[in-house]
Image 1 (cartoon, helix red, strand yellow):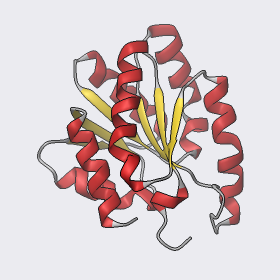
Image 2: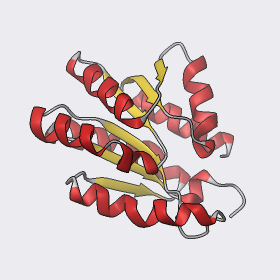
Image 3: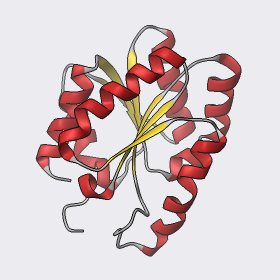
Image 4: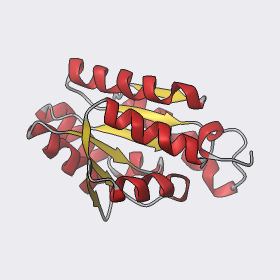
Length: 169
């Protein structure tokens, strides 16, 4: 991921008032994790699985802190129970940033299943999402997602297309 994209993500999160981040490591987002962990404006907690991270972010929201869960798109499948229970049953929302593994142009064959299942799972959980494919749209996309989360009090996902995640498409 280009440094300019990382700068847009960090700047966009700050502009939107996000103070807490949880993540499960993913190579496409690794530079974002490192920057968040080094930045004193953020509290970051890496987690063992995506469901735990969703719980942490929902808890932060309950405490009045804007949060983001950064995870590979396989994490949407892994966190289905927590997303359904916390979002539908309890009304606690989470903002997710997800790289679009399996997007057109992804060079890894194992990513195909990730790309093929992410959108249908988000749809099944009724989670609105926005796909950003241009670097100059990242900050606006973060603001839009957090506005929707605040208005609906429900989860929302920002999906980062391969165009902004991978330098050598």
